[in-house]
Length: 134
Image 1 (cartoon, rainbow, N blue to C red):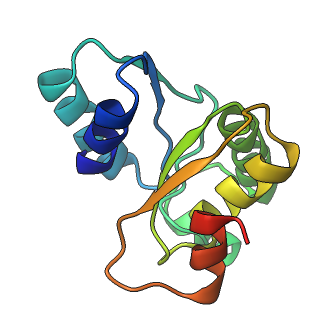
Image 2: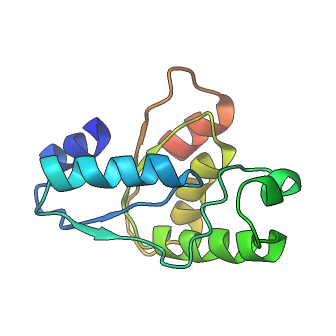
């Protein structure tokens, strides 16, 4: 939540926040925090998000009954579609996926400038590229 608050200080005209996660419980917890601490923000979610609980397609069935790899791929791509419209990103370098989103947004997205906050305690070359763009 501190990342969202930092962006709001930088740009008080922010009205929407896109919330996605493979972890349904973490997503719900974050939504409750947003509702309590930043109730004026409009939340945008991918209603078709599988929230499979893992980044591994091989373990998928253990997390979400009835979901296959095709569902996860469709979920990931539709979430990416949402994110390509964003300008501000809170990522974690623990996840290659979240680091990929701002990289793609710089190349294929609609925003003229991209700003990234990495909340992970460690960084790597790829997350550094995601944050800085070069």
